Amino acid sequence: MNPNAAGDRITHARVLAIAGPIVLSNLSTPLLGLVDTAVIGQIPDPALIGAVALGATLFSFLYWGFGFLRMGTTGLTAQALGADDMDEVRTSLGRALLIAGVAGLALVALQWPIGKIAFSLLSGSAEVERHTHDYFAIRIWSAPFTLANFALLGWFIGRHKAGTALALQFLLNGTNLALDVTFVVGLGWGVKGIAAGTAIAETLAALVGLVIASRALKRMGGHWDRAKLFDAERIRRTITVNRDIMIRTLCLVSAFAWFMAKSADMGDVQLAANAVLMQFVSTSAFFLDGFAYAAEALVGKAIGARTRERLSEAVRISTVWAAGTAVFLSVVILAGGPWFIDLLTTAPHVRDAARLFLPWAVLTPLLAVWSFQLDGIFIGATRTVEMRNAMIVTLALFLLAWRLLAPAYGNHGLWGAFMIFYLLRAASLLYYYPRVRAAAEAEGLTTR
Image (tube, rainbow, N blue to C red; front, side):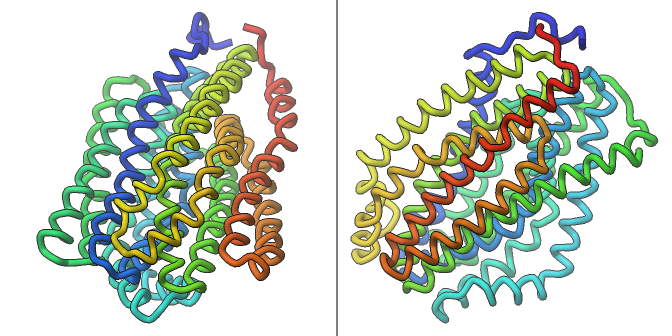
């Protein structure tokens, strides 16, 4: 057993020490989405709100296909930390940044065909599409920096440096918020201002993150081992973990993209109303992600240190806090939802439509929390094959549910299928969960 694991018990305070800063940093992201919507929503034109929503959905699909750079790096870094392998902690970041740089430059170079394919799938009115084109053409240039941010965030969380992740997220989203207001309200750039603010903020955060990481590497010990960085077996494992997470994430984002695309099919008002309600869903997700991230870091370190008791503690304690948070979020959305809807848009028809479907947003945290926690456990254990298989099945069944419900119940059917999607995510991962424990036991977990 790793000697550094001794006396390293997982407690409620320790879970909160990791989850708390992540929740705060994550809160800045949905707050940014709220500000984007609120700023553009002061112009009483549903097409502008819809364009920002579709543009954000497009980039969610594009970038979160590379979400493995965050999730895979967290799991691999945490396990290396638990095993007290500082060289591997270092090279985990190096590999992730190499992938981020190459992939980001490829996205910029291929922006024309990517845009053609994306806009053939995400249809809206002519005005919505025109504004969404403007958003895409500007924001795509920050792709290498956005992907570098994923790698850096995963590495800091894997090293239990949640405070650093918090600082970088506040920098990114605080800068974005200030630029949104400046470009949209001050200069009147509209949707182009939203995109420019995001691109500049993503670039700044990546550059600052690289400086912080460079200084941390000098202090932490270990050295750059070229043989380890390009070791075939380690690269194979990294690619395998990242490939599976990429497929899983593309399926996940496909479900959200499908939701927004079908919202657009119902007209600009319904699209705008669902975009407003998705801000509640996003805000809830970023709260719940804090405890999922804590599970990732703690489960990964427990497995790396081969300690059975800490694995169980990481799962139990993080899940207790996540479940309580989900109940709190639902109560807040139920009580404050109408007020927040009015804050986000001044369009009367959009307000009325959002209020009608608000109960679905209230229900979301209670159904979503279980899949979030299981995601965190599986990522920390790097059981990515099971995550991939579970999400493929879940996406197929979600589309079937939409096909059965939407024709008869319209937008209620779309939201109902979305709730089924969350339940299926949890059920499919729960089916595979015994394999996580069995694999950990097979790797020689001790009782300490």
